Image (cartoon, rainbow, N blue to C red; front, side):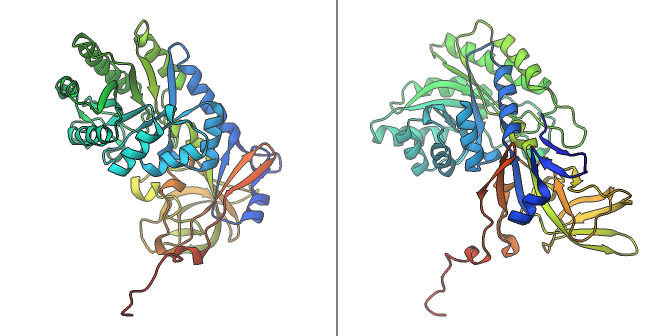
Length: 419
């Protein structure tokens, strides 16, 4: 369910919060998240897999706002983390370590030590060198690391190449054909214990076919491992279900859940799921204000105060985001425009050749579907402060992260003594 809509006066609201009033209070650019949308999306996803023992580990990299994480914790979610920083964030938000899995191809010794001490549920190990190092680190501390071996099933996720992770040329996971040998090797390792098999084939998946192909490959492997004496406890199917940005029709979580649960029927392994975008993607928008409307002989440019440092996806992936006027103006002329930001890069554009009601300087616009991979990928490029983040619930709103001050960008810098 989508909780952003224009009211009868043509004013866009986040749940019951007026976005013009919010912008007047916190300025722009600002990320706005809807609690009701997050809660509804999580509940729908969780219920989709209710027919089999499972744990939903929210993918923290999609949106690591503490307000979002605390909302997930209250709903009973676990966390899929990819760094020591995400471990710290998730714990601070109230997600217990026993509901956490640690993914990522480049875990450091310090990160391994912190996760071992926290007693997380599993390390999603992605290579033999990582497995060897984790074993040494755990053994030196008198601990045993629970390992879920991430396998690469060589399945085409049919998504953007930058977010496809399940092909054999990918940096993620070990080839599925090597898993049995690696598992046998683990029997001789004192510092690690194989508890699960993990895979993740990519993000923004719009077809169920590759998801089920990957699961079938993993279950065949699990059966081989069990036959070889490895009591696998968990099957981690990862995440990746897409959302509609521009007319896409990704499978509904209920559809995926029904098919997955049917394949798991009668099996002893628990399921671990790692959704991110499908929970928070459409639960957030980026609120921005028009600075100028610039007309040339060939183009009309709408220049706004948000930029690629605030929302990188269009510049990085060529991603499409719907853009709405925050206040609908009757009679506004539909015009083909490029909606661009102030950053000194030609890639700094949120939309090119987009037909939309022509705004005026000072108007507010909402860049939709910005709840995932929005603020988390932001930077201070061009020495632009990080945007504010606001969480709404009904008619209430909370400034979850204040806008960064320009002075704070360089606050930690110092000059060398010879200057």
